[in-house]
Image (cartoon, rainbow, N blue to C red; front, side, top):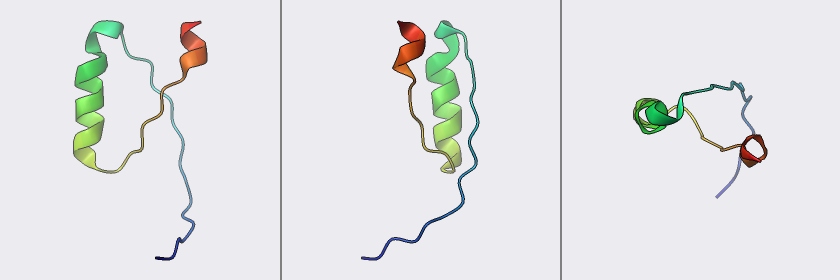
Length: 43
């Protein structure tokens, strides 16, 4: 297995708490994004 670097495009989205699951499902359906949560925002 070889790894090839790809150019990354970053974006942030702020979603109301009650819409988080829906937003995550919509993004996941595209198959084009990798999701990360930013825990420092919650502190």
